[in-house]
Length: 244
Image (cartoon, rainbow, N blue to C red; front, side, top):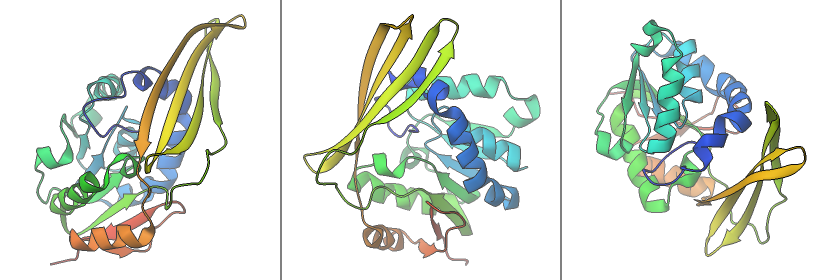
């Protein structure tokens, strides 16, 4: 998942691109590429993480891209990704090393994307983030995001395996489990590095996800000055700041 807060991701940053980059890239190209190609002012990437979506936005648009990423571990991976881009693309990127609210961006973009981010925000932070996105969009600007789960499940969800991915003699993988815990959905990532069938390393990181039904999201967006519109892709929600 992409970064949203300054703390955390210290474990996941090492493994994220190895295990998830290609899947995330294909998804971002399908979900955000066409809208980015139509952007004429700038694109805002909320919670840029390791920069997978940022890179897609740069490839598919010709406008400046604002990448907001407060987590130092994820931002280090983002900087490494930017280092491998051409100078012309790097010249179009502004990295904001703080939360979107702290960045204080005002009417700078006609497209904002929040990929794999909104579920990671507690309700209060989610509401302030909507307001910050609305402020950053020009009138008529569009927001695309993947919504959080719409409810808290009654029992743990089936485990998901990421990888394995081979690096030399080693195999990298992760088991991801999600279970309800004190009103949130906890996502537990257990990462492993194995060689010749033996585990060399095992590390774990846990993320809290806050479910919210579509009706609540619609109300929050409206309170922030964003009106729900038809999303261009399955699995996304979309909202627009009304034109002046």
